[in-house]
Picture 1 (spheres, rainbow, N blue to C red):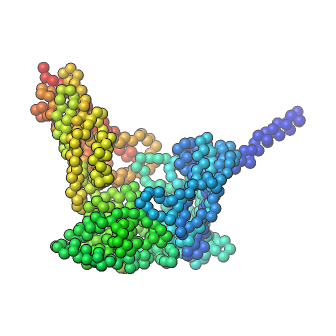
Picture 2 (cartoon, one colour; picture 1 turned 90 degrees about the vertical axis):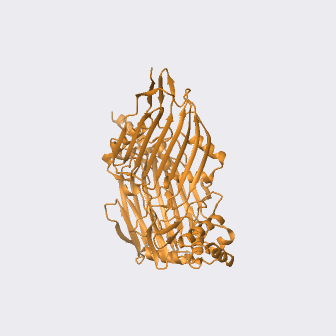
Picture 3 (tube, rainbow, N blue to C red; picture 1 turned 30 degrees about the horizontal axis):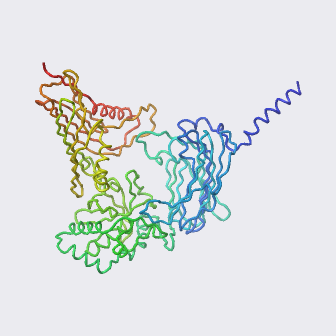
Length: 635
């Protein structure tokens, strides 16, 4: 019996030993971290060593377990290097579900490519990337990397929760710096105090989190930094190349940017003469601004140039005047120079552009910006100029750069200002459809659509980007009708601070309606149908943020064969909710079916408990826009 017991424990120890020796077995993940999780950060150790005002060393060790296919989006390593940075260490390892190492990364497996591959970009920045592309779940990846930066203008933030459906077992962020070096932090959703200490003669500051459950993906949820721990980091004084700056206030940061653009606004003599010709017959500064902007658009095109300090310092106005191209910095600086020559004050303005970009935190100065525009303060208002576009109307910013803060680089330093906001009043879509239905169910109609402000942004790009043949193919794919042909189309633009676009479509829709005996089945809403449905969510956790704000007005008049009356109509719909208003109705006037629809969408922040009401609102609009009417022919 004693011998049997010894053999039993020996066999057990041999079976358990591999698991104990394994690095990161997936079965050791705490159960509470598996809910909503597609991947789990097992360990993350980040050290930012600020060695001087002009040099940092960034070390990261991260271990991540991928639970399913959806979690594979987190299982990669990437970093950027350029004139100001170098990647000095990079290694990776792959483990199976039991935590046994499968293999290690080979150097030739790391991809190395230009930061942007588009033909219009000229950059010295490059990106390295690696993913094991493993498909047997769960599996674990481990990456260790070290990067040296010879600038301190951009200091990394700490975001232990890198996205939704990602849990975190532990993550630690440590900053090491000299005692007299000053940096600034802004904490989001971090309830504890950092731990401050020393390492030899240097000071340390550490933040740490443990056992953070995954944040579920929810429709209209707040950005991740609002609901997960996040530490924003900003320099006080910094260096970029041979330039030294101060980022502790927006004013001081603006003074640094002024160093980069100083002296870059000189125009050659031929350009000065051209400016004089353009403004000679103008009766107001506004007219001068608009004519010079159109001139700039007509002679330049965008080429992204990001080489060394040129990634932040614009090319001279004389360069753009001669070459006819430049990036957002160069073109905006050139526009400022043209206006200066005409005696009009304008400002080089930094902005965080992008239709989905969040606004900058105004109480924490740092470099958030990815774009430059030109701001022209006139006596009554400010004209904003998007200088990379050859077609955009002067004064219009749209979804790409409207309704957000920008930093004006003035003679006194940086000054925050807001670009124009476009509300429901400006963002509108008005559609009038007139058609005739024959006895075969074929509907031939003309649609007259008018887009105002942001609803027209995509249409504007469509008009200027595609040939007529491409436009027709696009329309055939965009319109939600079963069998139809676009027989004719045209567009007319009215540029302005609130640009307008008129769209005229002629369409033949076969089998649009169905005749069965004496009954006629038809959907009165021909073109503009709400297509957004959201799933049920009984455990909604976070507020709902709705960002779209617009008004739609539709009128449809369809001539139908004589003698039909409504048997089952579209009951008048009148929905008024905090999220918007939806109204629809249909009547018969003689032999004409008349359908009207109005939708107003409201932006705002709403409590999580309002989600069922929002879902019901969307569902009623979806059904209402597809309601089929039944008409019956009188005996």
